[in-house]
Each structure stands twice: as C-alpha cells, then as structure tokens.
Image 1 (cartoon, rainbow, N blue to C red):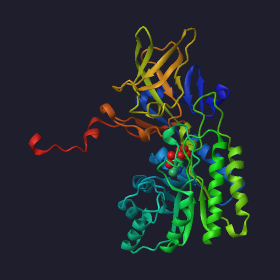
Image 2: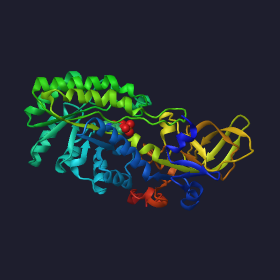
Image 3: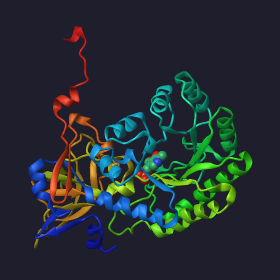
Image 4: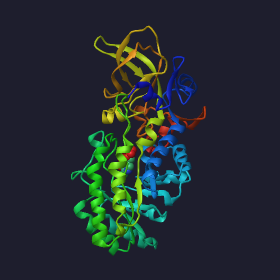
Length: 437
Ligand SMILES: Cc1ncc(COP(=O)(O)O)c(C=O)c1O
C-alpha cells in the first residue's frame, strides 16, 4: 500500500516535519505526559467498529459484534464501543467485572472462557452471563452451579474447534486436533444432546480459529465446517440455534507493504455462506455474531517513546528507548512486527539501520530489528504503531518498571485515562511476615 495512505488510514501524518496523530502533535504529547506513553485515538476505534458493522448489516440484519475485551480492556475503550452499540466477548471473570465497571449490561456479554473453574461458573450464573463451554466435561459442574444457586437454565453454547486454524504465530492459532480449545466435530452431537437432557432449552454455536488472520481465505474451510455442524445439529437434534458466532481473528496490516484485510472477501467467504443456510426454513434466523478485537482497536493506539542511548558497538547500532517488552511484549513474544517511525523528520542526514532496544535486562528486549532511520540522536522521540490490541493488556512491571500512562485523544483534546503506575503500586500487595520485619 502507498505509505502515506497507510499512515493516513491510522490518522497519522507529518505536519511541518512533526508526526501528528488525529491532528495532535506527538512531541508535545510526549513532553506533556512523559514517555513511554500509550496514545489512544477514539475516532479510529469508532471508524473501525462502524466499518465492520456496515459490512455485517449489508449482508444480514440480525447481527451482533462482540468486541473481544482481551485485546484492550481500558474502561474508556469499552465505553466508546458501548456507545457505538457493541456487544462484548469476555475470556475471564475479570473481564466481565471490567465490563460491568464500564456500565455494560450482562445481556450484551458472551463469556468464552477456557479451563473454567467452579468459581468462574458461579460468577457467570449469578450475573446472568451467557456461557460458551469449552469441554463436554464442564457441563455437569455448570449444571450443579445452576442448581445450587436455584437459577433457571436457559441458553448454552459450545466452542467448536473446526480443526482449520489460522493466525500470525503458532501461539495464536486456536483450532486443530492438538490445540487446547473447544470440542471437535465428532463430539458435537454428544455435547448438545447432553445439554438438552440437562435442561438447557436455547442453544448457540461458536468458533474462533485464531488471531491476526490477514487473508480472508483462511476462514473458508473453518466456516464451511462450522456451518455443516450447525446444519447437522438442527437436523439431528431438531434444535433451532439462537446464534452462530464466527469468532474474531481479523488481522491488520502491521507492515506498510501489506494490504488491508479484504472485508468484501470475508463477506463472501463467511457471511454469505451463513446467509445461504438461513434460507432453509428449518434453520430460522439465528443471530450472526463475530468477536473481533484487533481489527477494532489495534491501529487506534501508538506508543510514544524517547531515545536515551545511541550505542555503536562496532558491529551494530542500537537506539535504546524507554519502552520495552514490559510496555509492548508482542515483538518479543511473537516476533511480531510493529512499524516504528520518528516523531520528527530530518533533512540532509544519512540513513542508518538500528535495532530499537528497550531497557529490560534481556537480549530479547528489541522492539524492532534492523530498522532504517535518518540518523537518530539521544532525546529524539519515536512512535511505535498499532499498539492498541494486545498492547497495554499484555504489559508488565518486569524489572520493576512501572506500567505507562494511557492518553485518549478526541476532537483535539487529550484525556488522561490511566495514570502511570508508581513504585508503590508495584509493591502494594506484598506482605512482609513478622520475622522479616
Ligand atoms: C475466543 C476469542 N474470540 C475473539 C478473539 C479476538 O481475536 P482478534 O483480536 O484476533 O480479533 C480471541 C483472541 O484470541 C479469542 O480467543
């Protein structure tokens, strides 16, 4: 893709040589809030959500987008999406609790956990949260929780592992015979018969094949498999499905040379095939659900970081910055690529290749390898792009480095939406036993 278009898609542009995000000067933001700092662009989250919603609406009206809270669970991000009419996908009780704090109602939450404990079930049942089971064995424990609480059983769903997985890294591929998630096709009739027999009377079906899928074709086989399972369920068990959830996974072009995910193709491969089977009288009109995280929030955030050290060891040039894998772990954890750009352009200086190195005491703390920049200097600012999904949520305080602040920008105004951690925050839950005092 044309580079300036790629930047513009993220509402990034250079004005008088300075990088601006949604019209705001990144050097001024860095100086005002300190670095490293996450900057979250509200408008872009809304744009991405609306684009997906329009895509779904154009194919089938009875649909819902459940934003995957795990991608970015900041309360302000959740409130932005709530105001757009989004529903939410949670992977833990902690995420459900966070949704409640954002004012989200139980009825718009779908709980796809895995390796559920009885405490997880109790919280979900007490709060009327729709549960998506991950193993047949879990249903007996769940029923006991319903019975103990005297709650009426209504809707239940199972996560199907369609065996065709995809994703940007082996660790993000979530379907396949040897993958821990969901139940396999041959277990489906047993699972739903059991659910029926145990008193559930409404049913949904779900899959999520992986995360960071940039080629829509990768959804094809899994979609066909899920739909054939859904048809078999309706035919065999005389069961009308309330919803079919195709999961998340829609990728974004982290590299300027990559193209956007092709939503038109996705429409043909996933949505139209779903619509085709709803033409069958017996099938009814189940809700079409998807649960994207990355597509909605990734491109909306950047990390601003400052160079503190330029090191030339005679073999390699390093630009040492104050963000590291404690701030953004994806490069270290998944060898993921994040584009890194200067906050200020320079004319008439040579271009050099640098490893952008964080301050964590591990050789793997490199945010970008062999990146070319006009010669960098200590105190320059850099922007790490596309950090709004699996960014802050996966950060840590490793090496006792406090997590950074998050700033929301909207209509030319910055809002502090999370303070940076203080040293005492990192120590706050430690208890020193008497004999060590
Ligand atoms: C069950 C489930 N749904 C949705 C998502 C969101 O994926 P993505 O952010 O790639 O859209 C995930 C992420 O792994 C997931 O595990």
